[in-house]
Image (spheres, rainbow, N blue to C red):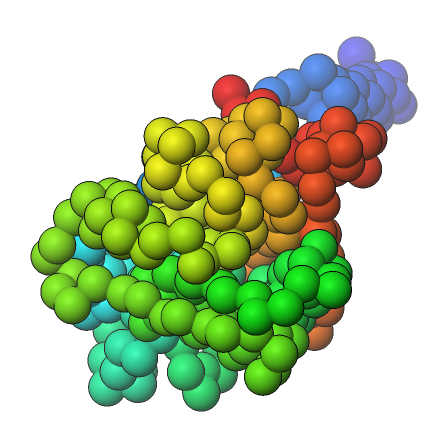
Length: 324
């Protein structure tokens, strides 16, 4: 082979190698397996909220889990767990690899600042109930306005009645959400009604027994009973009908048992927030903060309904969530 033919052969070989390389890169890009990006891991730490108390929130969380390709670990505090014990759960989740936390605070007076800097090196967003004077992003409806709306609805129902007597169950007031609802309620009621505020003398006392005994001993002078949390409202909804006879029930919450009680005419007015959006926006906002973006979050919508409203399209999904 002369030098000319030898050069042609080498050039041809180089061209073939280049073509093969290009084809291999193209094939790998189109048909090859792409390395799956590892999902970010977050934890949701919730206070105990009665039986199935977080169904609507869970639906929003699970929808966000799919939409944002994130892995969520759910932690439910035990009934009666203190704020410090709940924060220990948060710390455990961070130690186990959580890159962000959604937290519904069981006690808003917990001194989180004393343990914040080193113990919590990841973004935390509070939902539904936050810490007092907290710098954390918080996602919730306006709880003061929820209580105020419930109070106004009650007065509307009793319009024209004289010497109205209201019994308010003041349990879980350590949560800022419940505390603000109470403030809104009392401001709405003003001095136009007689308000009796009741709560357990000891947190260790059985709440169901306390409420049942309280209602039984309240006599006929009580016209309406108000519950500011799901737990207390669920218990009131489960009392025998004769115990609640001649007493109208008002409250805040949207569990399945509460909605069923309203459907049976046992609850006059119900105020509830869009917990689906709390869950969904919580994940969305936390993912942004994990990327270094601090977003401004608007208040979540809330609604005031009576029996005739609960099957309307705008409320049905929020009152009858389906969680897989």
